[in-house]
Structures are given as C-alpha cells and as structure tokens.
Amino acid sequence: MSKQIFPKVVIVGRTNVGKSTLFNRLSVDVKSIMLDQEGVTRDPIHDVVFWQGHSFELIDTGGISLRKTDDDILEQTRKKALAELENAAVIIYMCDGKVGVLPEDREITNLLRKFGKNTFLVINKVDARVAQEQLHEFDKLGYKQQFPLSAQHGTGIADLLEAIVGAIADKPPILVEEEPECKVVILGKPNVGKSSLLNALLKQERSIVSSVAGTTREPIREQITFYKDIIEVTDTPGIRKKHAVHDELETMMVKTAMGALKDADIVLLVVDASEGQVADQELKLMFYAFKEHYKAMIILFNKQDIVESYEKETMSSHLAEYEYIMKKVASLSISCKTGKNIGLILPLIEKVRQRYTQQLPDDELTFLFKEALIEKPLYRQGLLLRVARVNQVQTGPITLVLRVNLPQFFGDKEFGFLESMLRKKYDLKGVPIHFIARKH
Ligand code: GDP
Ligand code: GDP
Image (cartoon, rainbow, N blue to C red; front, side, top):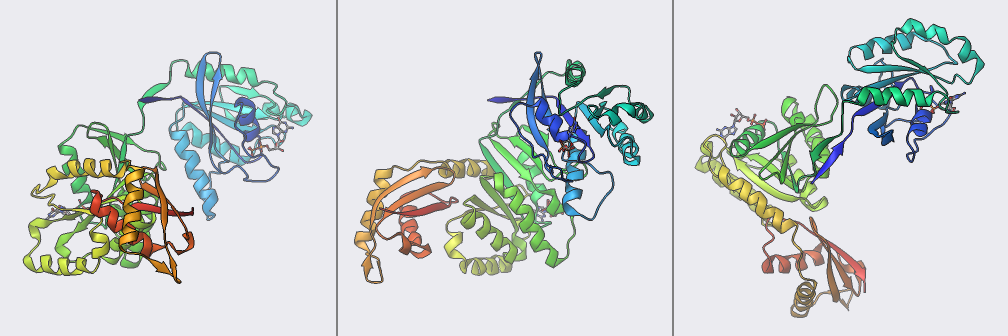
C-alpha cells in the first residue's frame, strides 16, 4: 500500500493580505475561514490542486510574523509556518497592494531568501486603484518573479498557476508506503534506557528512519518503521533531552506521552528495575494509557544486569499492590546492556498486536457473560442485572457493547467482574477491554 506525496506550494504573508482568498480561489473544495479580523486563519490548511496535468499541495500558513512573541498561539503559528517553508517546493510571498511595502515585508523577504527556494512575490488587491498606482514600490523587494493579481476577482491567477507548474514540472509526486499496521511508542522517565532499547531493537532489523514533521529546530518524534514494515516505533526525545527537575518531570512525561499516545496502538513502558520500585508517574502513565485510552501495554523492566536480590524483592512487593493492573498488562525483564531477552520483545509486540486486533465471536461473548451472571448474580438496589446480548463493535482496542436491562448500574465494578471472566477464557495479556453498556 502506498500514497502520493505532492510537491508543496506554501503561501506566506502578513495577516489580511488575502492568503485565504487566494487559497480558496486555487483550491476548489476547501474553505479556510475568512474574516476581516487579524489572525483568523491560524492553522496551516492543506489541499491538493490539479492544474494542466500537474498536481501540488497548496498550504496556507495562517499568517507569519518574523518577530518572536510572548503570545503562545502566534508563536506556534510562526513555528508551524517556518516548518512548512522548510519542506516547500515553491514559496508564495503575498503582499497587500493597497497597503504597499512595509518594513516587515523587507524583513520577511530576507528570511525567505535564506530558504533558497523558488519564491514568487504576489501583490494582491490590484483591483483597487491605489494598488495599481504603487505597484512599482514592490520592485525594491528584489523578487525575480512578481505576480500582481486580485485573489478576490480572479485576475492574474492563471499566470501564477503557470509559473507554479513550471517550477514543479521536474518534481513528480513521490510514492510512500502507507501507514504501518502497528504503531508502538516507547515511553519512560529519562535514563531508564529508552534509546538503548531502540538501538538494540534496530540492530536486529532492517529499519527505515523517517524524519517527522515537528518544528524545524526540535523534532517532536523520531519514527522508525521496521519488522516487516508493520511496526512503527515512536521515540520521544523530548523526554530524554531535558534534564528536568522532579516536579517538572511529571507534567512533561504526561504531556509528551499524551501527544505520542494518540496515534499509538501499543505502549512500551521502559522502567529501570534497578531502582527497586515503579515511580508514581510511571504508574500514572500506565493508567492513563491502558485504562483511559485503551492502549495495549508492555512494561519492560530494564537493567536486569544490575538488579540485586534486594531490589528484586522490593520491586515485587511494590508491584503486588498494583496487582489488579499488573496482571492485565504484558511485561518482560530485559537488559539492553547484556542483551537479555531483547530477542523476545518483537515477538511479544507481534503477539500483543494480534490480541489487540482480534475479533471475538459475539455468540461466545453473550453466552459467557450470561452464564457468569447466572453463576454469580449481581443485584443493585434490589434489582437483578442482566445481559441480553454482547457485540464486539471494534478491534484495536477490543470494544464490547453490552445490551443490558439497567445500564446505569454497569460501572467499573460490574465491568471488572465480566472482564475477569473474559480474561479467564481468552488470552488477553497486555490488552485493555473497552466496555459500553446500552439499554436492551
Ligand atoms: P489573510 O489574512 O491573508 O488570509 O487574508 P484574507 O484572505 O482573509 O483577506 C483579508 C481581506 O482582504 C478580506 O476582507 C478580503 O475580502 C480582502 N481581499 C482579499 N483579496 C482581495 C482582492 O483581491 N482585492 C480586494 N480588494 N480585497 C481582497
Ligand atoms: P533514555 O534516557 O531512557 O533514552 O536512556 P538511555 O538509553 O540513554 O540510557 C541511560 C543510561 O542507562 C545509559 O548510560 C545506558 O548505558 C544505561 N543503560 C541502558 N540500558 C541499560 C541496561 O540494561 N543495564 C545497564 N547497566 N545500564 C543500561
């Protein structure tokens, strides 16, 4: 499976010069928000444009200001725009012909020059007489290719399109592999051995390292596809690099984890077993990923080579307290240093992936839960709870919809009971179950 990546044409310019108007004129079916208000279009907007046999991806960067600002949203917009420019085949710098040349236009022009890309100057709003009159002012900016046009009225658009197509003629779309089947994210505190683990895994496998869109300066993630191209691992260098003080660490871990978790199927949580216990934030992360977000979970107890019997004991008594979740997640004791059990990790990931994406037979599920409630009837406020039918409506995570008589009484405890029955019957180690109760 593969998909096409088109050459990118990026529109930049101050707010209100007419970027969204141009974007809408060029792209047929994407509407970016247009308002007479500064900074309305804040996210880059993408669309693929076809013109005379050529295709390109058009990107509207919601306004770029060179100046760093304290306003978080504006600063993010600026960084996003810079990241888009990095990947551009053509940059369109758009000015407002009615306003004329501002000092900021010079600054931005200087910045754009540094990217060394094909850069066109678009002078918009030439339908206005004042714009016509001050057109020559823009010569000062020193662009080789200038396009006076009216985004609103459509005059001059064809010339611009022709120039774009000329510039990308030698840049055909690139075919890239489609999404991998299984996305794995490596999480953990600093220094537990995340990068050592990644390196150890990669040594066993052919790997494709792909750079991933973040900001230009600090990539958010490094993604690596390997193991028959079905596993994509996201490493989170953000956690690794910063030498954070303790308080900061928790927020940082959770923050980074939240971002990285969203796309993942399986979380590899690396723990330093030589510490003799699991830290609070590691436990929180486990709950967050497994219970709240229904991600499959493998805990890797690393640094076994330096674990003494004392730490082994404290660790197991500590984990005993969390038995109710520990018995559900998958785990492995490893050492990245000696290579102990490293060879078992990929097969375990594969196994957990199969469990996570399996479809259980609805009839069996229905029978299992009905039986369980006959053997151990559950009463709430004197009323008997009954399950009429069970359907697995989704895989990865396994999501079960239960048709029941009293959905309001089905909560953690009741689902917990049914889940334990499920785990006795099927091999679900490492895999969460998402229960939903609906009125029969
Ligand atoms: P952006 O902030 O750069 O995306 O600008 P918009 O596309 O939202 O346009 C800002 C304002 O300029 C809007 O009121 C548009 O109607 C107006 N505008 C856009 N293009 C033209 C044009 O070609 N001529 C005139 N006169 N106004 C335009
Ligand atoms: P990260 O910050 O989680 O990516 O951790 P690193 O992979 O950079 O490892 C942190 C430190 O722990 C480094 O000095 C590694 O050499 C060391 N380390 C990693 N795995 C092991 C292991 O299995 N045993 C021992 N003794 N040290 C390890």
